[in-house]
Length: 525
Image (tube, rainbow, N blue to C red; front, side, top):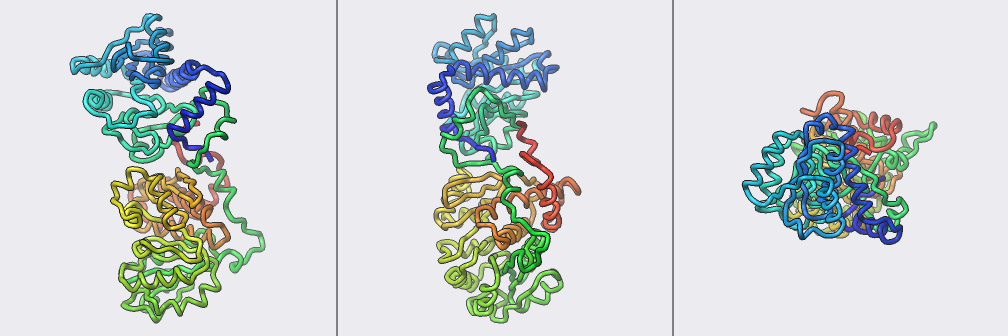
């Protein structure tokens, strides 16, 4: 797994390198600028020959931009460098790089009025490459006024935009758009991944991410207290359950799924079939009794259990008696897909939470009923989307979006559960305060039933013996990978949940053949 760094953690790495290793900050800045320059020469040297527009802010990010400008200018490339602010107020290493650029004959134009923005527009139109070195990881307040005009001009007129470390306007730690932000085609980020490059909505502005080594010793990463990680194929492969050559179904995990209500038999079917696709040896699907004939037709490989004491075709407390024997036989339990929001269902869950001692996965309508409750004995996994997370925390969806990582951690603490916060780049948060970001999956998976497939996959992995945390991590990765395989085979548009469920075995197969950051072309090492 790869560390995902906050701005504070990155500053600490810089400090350790400068103070303990003795590598001057100006050298780190030179290395950062050279990394952007090398990327530009590798990928866009032909365009750079036509000219580059570099926009520098007054901080360290701007200092990196001055390095890029000096190196391009030294080779005779046409460079138009714009500086925002008062040059006399630039301090430290950035001031050194500004001075070097000017003393080598560089022409620095100031951006301070609307007339200057017209000159910038002309440069963006005439020079096909734009280097965004306005703000770095330290930005904490919304971009407004003149700065916002500059960023909007870049977004409208730039041909190819390369961001230095982080597209200007993105919150480095949360991925929020602070007012407005540069829409980059590429981001060359220094030293390690920044959270804001991977958390939406900021991730949509990052383009391809290129991690540049700038001289920070690897040993210092171990000294920074990091708790945010990017999942990769190697780490997932190491966690997956082993199936021996002489295995039989009784040894491969027995899972009980409690699901279904009128109109939502599909959710029950998808979750149970997905559990089988993810390797569960036996899946019991307990449903309200009058729905059983429907499910028997839909899922022939699943053992259906008609609950005769269900009320109004929904799970209800008397049905708990009917599953008491099954709860002793199975290795894990899933509750929630399609169960509905009737009050009796909530009372059923309340009884289940008191009695079940097997690992329990709760999703969908089950999360509606979970609010304010906790499992008494069972290790718990919950899999909310943003709306369900807001409901469980008693806040708005917008408040969840403000800090996805924090919301996931709060859910883990409040419900004493491993949490899968679903969305683009889903997060898995643990009760120990760690968060894992999943890189697999694609926009084609934004369709009904995908959560049911994920729930079945996670339930199967728990039933096969994984602890709740690795089961959630592996389930999310494999689910997204199956969706990526479906997109490759049939295209993103119109993928349905059943397409993904059918490709879970293929995801296991491909995972065993791959290493590194599988199917995440946004990051280029």
